[in-house]
Image (cartoon, rainbow, N blue to C red):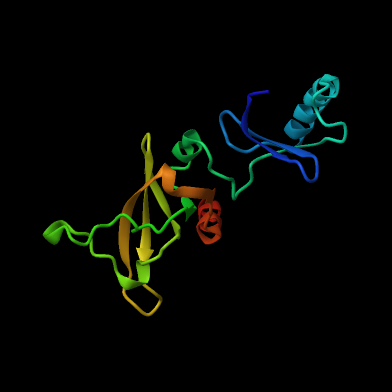
Amino acid sequence: LELELYDLEYLPGSGELRVYIQGLKASSVKIEDCVRVDQALTPFIDTLEWMPSKLILEVSSPGLYRKLRERKHFQHAIGETVILELSKDLFADVDPSKGKNAQVVPKNLKNLKKVRGKLLACASDSVEVEWQEGSKNDSKSDRKMEIPFANIKKANLDPDFNQLISSEVKT
């Protein structure tokens, strides 16, 4: 089938087991792939006594706004636009007492707990993201920041549809 498991999610309240799959070569999958995986898993799940009797199996692709949970998810998303929700203020660990080497945190970035930008790199313990700061009326400047995985509460791809449409038109 040339598919791989992308993620699993169990929702105990509704009894749903969501299985997210993607292609090995292209990350997209066809509805027929989802049906085949569902048909392959259902008889196996039915034989397991520890599975809830009212389990609802849902097989799909991770989608355009796919969650990024594992390091390999981040590695595959390098160059893409992502949204990162942080567990603490991005600049919480900045020490303003370090003199000349102190990082100056602009007022508009204090208490920043959500970042939308381009994923540049993925290391073993952090990711590097570039985003534009400034409002529509201000001049915008690019800002790069390394963010530890420990500070990432939730992460998703956030595709720019204008960019997607313009690249589709060119091909």
